[in-house]
Amino acid sequence: MAELDAGKLKENALTSIRLGIEDFERTKQKPEQGGDPARALSAVRNLFAGILLLFKYKIAVSVNDPDDAPALIFNPPEVMPQADGDGGVEWRPIGKFKKTTIDVATIKKRFKGFEIEVDWPAIEKMQECRNHLEHLHPANTLGEVAGFVADLFPVLREFIQTQLNEQPADLLATAWPVMLAHHEFFFNTMSKCSAAWNDAGVPERMQLWLDQCQCEECGSPLLGPRQHDIDCGSRVESQDDSFKYVCVACGHSDLIAPLMIKALNDAYDYDPRDGGEPGVEGCRCCDRSTFFILEQHCLWCGAELDYNKCSLCEEPLGQDDQDNGGYCGYHAHQLDKVMRDD
Ligand SMILES: [Zn+2]
Ligand SMILES: [Zn+2]
Ligand SMILES: [Zn+2]
Image (tube, rainbow, N blue to C red; front, side, top):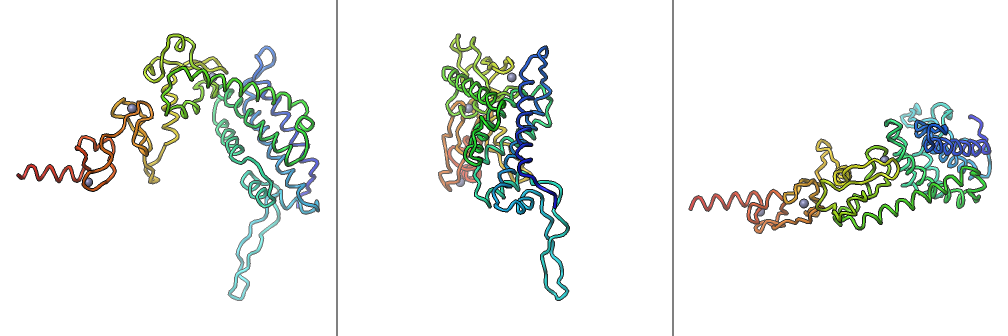
């Protein structure tokens, strides 16, 4: 089996995180100061790799005998059924431990086995973000990278303190104050933005989807309402064809309503070929794609159904059945026939 040096794992983890933070700093500087937006992707790659290495280090030092560590970190050989020559089956490993180390899914299993706790939803969100960024042009990712670094901060802090029993400031040295400052800036800005929207007349049931919006130019979630719209007393609710957001990260400005509606519709995206069903449809009242089928009301204008179920068979009714006077399609048709036969 390949050799494993736990100390080396830790060192590589810290180097990777430090390089990631250096890349991140370069993305924020102006070109004349040596800034380079194209470093965004390598920042995220380095930071994510760094945290995984730190996880592997934790696994390696969780066993008393260092000789047990490699089997936990390297990918094990495949176990295959073999005929035992006597009509029975034996499950035997084929080949040796591989030279590759375990991936996120396997780290998760090892952590479970060793009762090491980590905020997995946060890690998975970061992994998703990294995969997503791989496919984008670097210029369109700066805002999203800033969110990634902000999210990484509490995960790292928690892990280093509770699992490694060390202080992040000691372990991460110069990278730590940068992360701390960024995290504080990020969340202060975030709460300022969300407070500013309080006076903007956002439909209450759309609030959740406002929180999901990202700048179309740079991917940043730091969006505030345009001051001009606030000063004029405009309301997103009714002036959705003019009310704009301004991105704090890049200054881009555009209509906020389509972003909110898109966030809602993306979350209920479905594929009929997989047996999926729509969760959202066009509202017959306000014409926006915000009618929430599960609860049969519009998240934007609040429109509800006049008739919730068929008064004969109690079948739940939707928007399309409302012209039937409180009957389902079948019973409306039946009644119609009776009336005509009379
Ligand atoms: Zn932006
Ligand atoms: Zn509506
Ligand atoms: Zn009916």
